[in-house]
Image 1 (tube, rainbow, N blue to C red):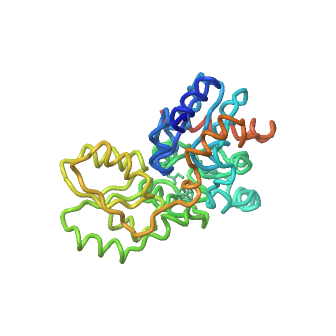
Image 2 (spheres, helix red, strand yellow; image 1 turned 90 degrees about the horizontal axis):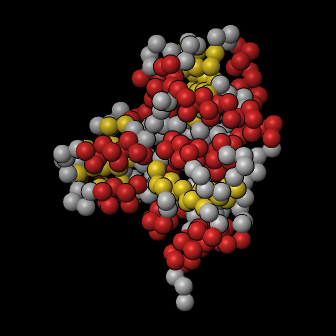
Image 3 (cartoon, protein in one colour; image 1 turned 60 degrees about the horizontal axis):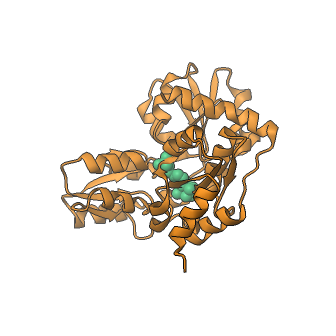
Length: 302
Ligand code: 13P
Ligand code: SF4
């Protein structure tokens, strides 16, 4: 009998496929991926690959972005229902209303947004490049959609801009409770607290370091400290402990799982490779317009 990991490796070769996995998918899926990373790293990899098929082990906006960047490639999602609720917390009408209000306005969308929303925006960002990109924009007023927490954080880092935030949020990060973090810090007095900017501002105020999933992993790996409280989805624990077997990592909250990222399983990766299921399609007009926002991100993030 063929093990599922071997079956995936065989199908991957047969189909000339590459597997990209976000740090939040289950450990065993990260283990068989060709590239694991944060949203920005994975969009760069999707942009660079020569493979004919991209299997995106992540949520829908990631697969959509890969397809927008690679219209001639087949992009497959192991579970097409794995979606980010925050991506739907902004409407075109809200953006149009804001454009009416300000002449000097840039609409910046977090990559955690639908392909349709990206067509209304000037540039896309991820949590690892938002500050850098917004600093480079010529406009004074920035409408940041859909994440209010990342928008707030960017505003603190770029005080020369007027950052107006929409009221979307990640249900997982937004639920990280400052009281629980306080308890964690009390229980582990030597631990540094590393938080993702999707956390609420009260939580960010308690952090020793704020950064994307890759930023958190890099910071913990390079730090001489031995203990860390981690304020993001628990999937990062896999890479954190692989790279740092002698360091200790504690979740900032008891239940820190993104149910959508956890829908991706080895069986579903195998099935989509074998059957060609879960293919992402983006209509041409949406693709062309949303490509501009993604390409501008790749250019300005350099
Ligand atoms: P990063 O991958 O940019 O750290 O963002 C985390 C996230 O929530 C992805 O959905
Ligand atoms: Fe969306 Fe939050 Fe899940 Fe990331 S962790 S995919 S922002 S719900």
